[in-house]
Amino acid sequence: MDTGNNNNRPTPTQCKFPPYGKDFQGGIPTGRFSNGKVPADLIVEELGIKEYLPAYLDPNLQPSELVTGVNFASGGAGYDPLTSKIEAAISMSAQIELFKEYIVKLKGIVGEDRTNFILANSIYFVLVGSNDISNTYFLFHARQVNYDFPSYSDLLVDSAYNFYKEMYQLGARRIGVFNVPPIGCVPFQRTVAGGITRKCVQHYNDAVVFFNKKLSMKIDSFKQNFPSSRIVYMDVYNPILDIIVNYQKYGFKVVDRGCCGTGEIEVIFLCNHLEPTCVNDSDYVFWDAFHPTEAVYKILVALSLQKYMYNFI
Image (cartoon, rainbow, N blue to C red; front, side):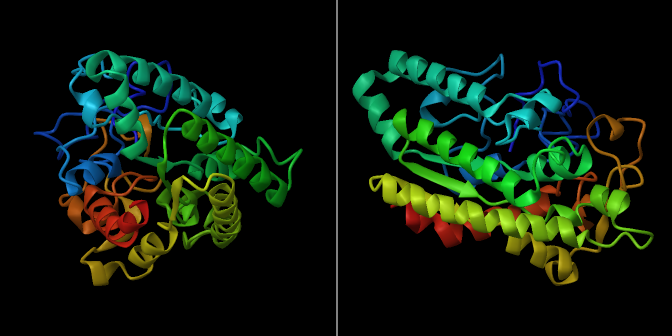
């Protein structure tokens, strides 16, 4: 989702260098974790709002952009505060502070009444959780000493609930929450934990399914407690899994490797200008060892908006 908020931060979770962005506006790396546009861009484009969703922390951000939408996402962030700390990302609480700052700026541009209207009628998309489960819990084992996975899921969904509540208290009403995708099938996890044949890591996917059920229930509870909210649980797990399992049906040729380098481990600074890239990235489900190609994102965004947009009305 991040469209460049990490660019000027001291974090390894960055991609402001080639070959990232090779299909974006003539090959400009902007901090988007893909070969081209990311879901944040494709959502606003599909809705006919604008072509890209700019990063709120972009030093060249035009004030007029605040009226039609900006992006607070930070690559590497998680519902678990420890996740954002490990990856030196902008924590969810810090993103809320940026949102508060945005509201003050917006009032300065369009006035209080118009700002309140924009806050209440805009749609806010939240996509968090992959880094918590994939990295903090399974890769770094940073929470396994104190939490089994069910109790870690409780920590995550409680944190998620509080995040939505803070958004609500600041004026947000229409909130779309994407669930966590099948992280066990990303090329990096296949390499690290998928055995000699590099299969999808089933117990990672099972953990995600378990978490997603808890997240869905927590969102139902939020709806009951805040009846004037229009919060929507959005499933991307199953559409992505279908693309991975039936990739040829969607016109893809390679599913178990990314387009960058060997495609097995290269992500962020390991995917750099010294690494070769595949000839045709639209043949690939994954761009690097973690993130899908723009071609996959386009399919997912179209399916998601088609299925869920009416729920925000």
